[in-house]
Image (cartoon, rainbow, N blue to C red; front, side, top):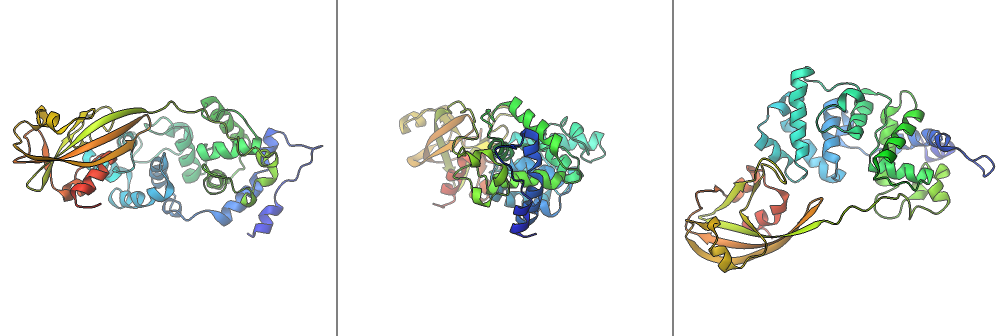
Length: 369
């Protein structure tokens, strides 16, 4: 379908005959579906949109860029191609496959849900939003995405991209961080969604938000199929819409990382099963900023036989609510203290699920810049 044709599907309105809220959303349908048919990106999970593949991709895409997800998705599908394999994989291997995507509870919830599906649903994802939303780690958006894309159910899938597009189309100054605002948009879309087109309709809105009505930077209004009905574009409000309340500032934590090395192996330990970075591996560390003398006196090095302590690179890692500002020391010792596991550079990279916060130090130990 040509650009001229989908533009020809746009609804024209005048000041005397302005569209109401639902009519404005209905007017998106023709241009939206035509545009998506022409401009949908080729993505690995779209090539074969089975319920399992849609589910995994949607969970991976939360808080993560599309380009970053592609290699993770391919690797995950190769090793865990179905619900049964996901339910059975050891947690440590699952976390290693997830390493670098962050928000590790997403992976744990995937496995928790996979096991429920094996026990109660014959190893299949339910085919309705109302059933999907009852499963661990599947919220309103993900349930809507799976139900509409994989099963064709006429239900909305409203994520941050869709909230931004709809806010601009309607010139809404409501706070899109508000759950009540999201629910109202879901109700609106449910009222106007065309029968038999739920997958393309939802993915089209998401796609416009991702590559046209972009989250950061100037929206590409001249390329947008919804331009003729977009009140924010018409009234030059795209700089101020959408409205989103600011999150609380992140807490800053100083940490001193101990890279304890002996005979080519490095000390690591497993974090507790609850809390931040639960069950992942890390390098031993101290809260706060510490000097070599303070480090040499800590019980974290009991029995190590310290040979030399020298500075290693600083690093910063940003979580959703906290920032780690890390200083580090390379500590050469006679032996790895008994309370730690010992890993060589290949094991750090390939075997143990390490928190992404330590990527810089894994590269450092492996001789990478």
